[in-house]
Image (cartoon, rainbow, N blue to C red; front, side, top):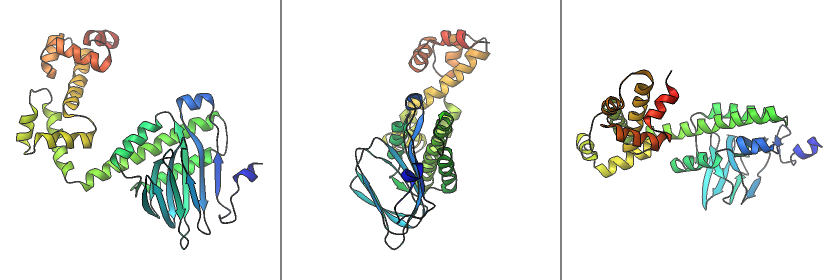
Length: 289
């Protein structure tokens, strides 16, 4: 029966294979899980068309060419292309008649799939050419091999591999975006300044003047590159420094607040409750050696 369900039409090269899985209840609630993963090589053109599918799809084009229609746009695909889509949106992908493609893919869901996808789609088009293509191919090959079995160990390994794949994709698109945009050098300069001066008092107007950039542009660009606001970035740096002092020094809360840039214990506690759900004193009691 496995051979019957795994086999492909005659238009596919015999080495093509796929694995379909049904996750356990635990995997569905706690893991990233595979719905289908596979490899195919075509002898002639083929089209896949779907919509309203509760799944996320990552595809690497290993050779050949074709197109993806997604969200009312047509994207050209070639060797080295990758796409990552939400299959609730109608889509189709079709191989070229003259240059049939070779693909490796995974349909997956679970855990924080939606959050990963939303982050990805906010930073990239669905189709791109990853610099980490060989590493992605290796991970997807491993995923296909792991899913030759259907057991809990395969689910554990699959979840880990999907995390690796998603992490590689996000790192690739964010690094590529920074390299292509000259503005990232300015934002890196701003971040470096904040890393050194986060305990000091300064305003957005002062930063704007120092780096010769409008405060509106500065706020927007910083958030775009680092996915946090300037203010939250500074508060996070101050909180991290405060945590070290709370755990490994005998300083009072007032002393810690002043040395971290919070200026008084009341504001320090306010930021701790907002970030950690407890006061600075409670944090010290829980974590002190």
